[in-house]
Figure 1: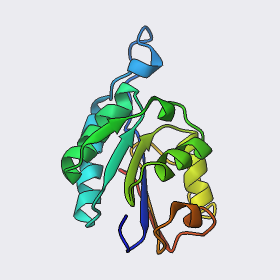
Figure 2: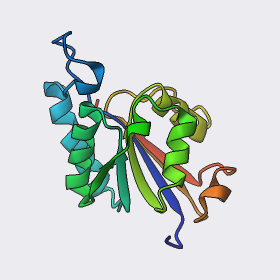
Figure 3: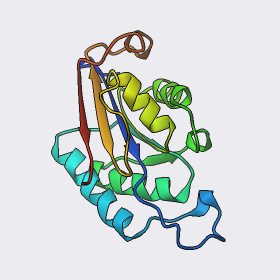
Length: 160
């Protein structure tokens, strides 16, 4: 891992299409707004100077499509993990800390994303709307240590 600390980016999947009730939740695609927001938010993260070591996404189609936009913008391969579909905040944190990466992007779902973002921001992020990006930084490079620390910096961005 790098010596400049841990960076965790939480991305809630972009807006999905609810138009066809016969489509299983796991297989719902992004709607028009989601297809527009995902690349735009990914570009904004890349333009901020963030460099990812890993991007891990839920296996749900809407999350994989969102993650693909971030992977393209950041030049990082995306890995799908079925544990992130409907994951709790604890599972999301565990997956990030187990990734052996200092700079990781997780793309997943609510309520887990909002719960984790609230916890890490001291409840200043109350809700992660679709395609929201929350970035957290710690000066230490040990996931076991940063789990007990407040982030040294954080930011929150939404498509609206």
